[in-house]
Image 1 (cartoon, rainbow, N blue to C red):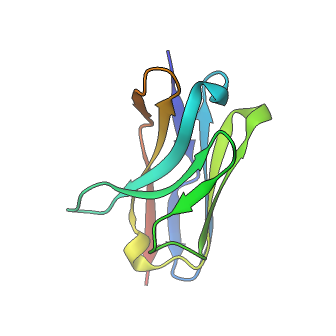
Image 2: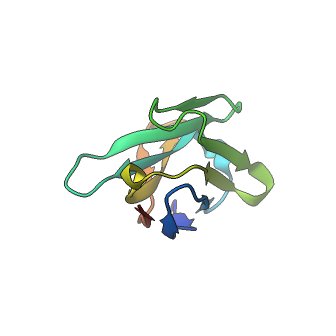
Amino acid sequence: QVQLVESGGGLVQAGGSLRLSCAASGSMFRFNVMGWYRQPPGKQRESVAAITSGGMTTYADSVKGRFTISRDNAKNTVYLEMNSLKPEDTAVYYCNAVARISGYDYWGQGTQVTVSS
C-alpha cells in the first residue's frame, strides 16, 4: 500500500517562504514521476511542479523562479521549496506519484498553504 504524507504547510506573509515535504512509504523508484499540485479556493486542481526518477524537473509558469522541487531518495521524500510567496499561492497543496508499471496516480491528503497580503 502506497502512502504519501505531506507536511510543512502553514500561514505565511507575502514574500515569505515555506518548504513542503512529501514522505512516501517505501522506495520512490516505484514511481516514474512525483510532483506537487495545488487547489486554490473555488478553483480546479493544477500542476505546480514535478520531478522524474532521473531528476528532470518541470514547473508551472506561475511558480518558475520562485519554487524548487527536489528529492532525497535515501529518505523517500520529495520537497517543494517555495520562496517569494504571493497571496495567489494560497491553496491546498497535494503530493502526487505516478506508479512506474501501472501508471496509477497516488495522492497525499493535502496540506494547506495560506499567504497573507
